[in-house]
Length: 277
Image (cartoon, rainbow, N blue to C red; front, side):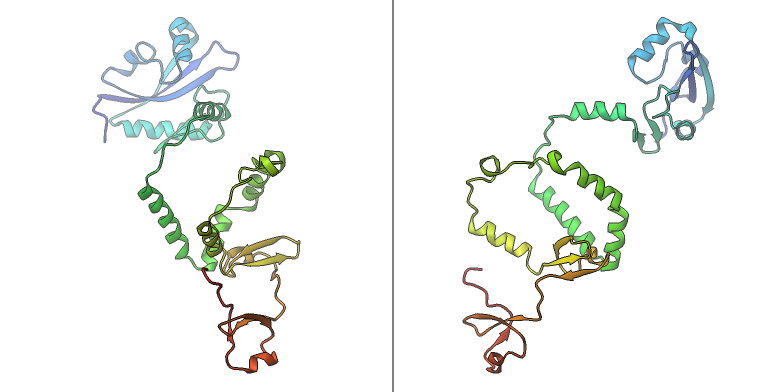
């Protein structure tokens, strides 16, 4: 929606008093003429110290109108282009702390702003999520990946989880940086706690069908045979000897398929589930 103001302009403020003149690029909508507004009534939308300095020492600043437009959107387009051209969010020659974009402001790479936001959010706990919200999120994740083929999932992993990103995350939670570092015995959060049968059964179901695989570097993972990680490098399934499980509705045996015991037709391939599982 267009702003109903009469004039929409993009402006430049220059601090000529500093050894290396610092600048500020912005956009303004007003009913006044730009030259009667900028540096007279309006002094930018940045932090107060910069505005107060202009009011206290007007001789140190020069003001330029870079363009006047019929709509605010047009003025913002020029602002966005100039911010991107000079990358003002990290450029020490500019007062701007972020780059304007069509969807808001980009502060990526600006450590000062990132640190301030981190300090503000430090200790702030997220509010409770409703059961419906959690179920929708879980459902969305399952649907987005369950519909992928193995090759499509591999491409998604390569794009969203490159090795550099994985290594950086791993480095950040390794050794003393890990929250569970050296928390053993009584210091472990689960020390003395007993798991319920339901919890044990639930965990068993989550790892059902997963096998242990090992690559040429000695790394091991437990996953399903369709896991895209197995497409990278050479992985071999561990614990495979050619033997399989058979049952006769009473007991289980692990043997080769030509085992003489299997001549009796009462044996079926697969393990007999224990009672209660």
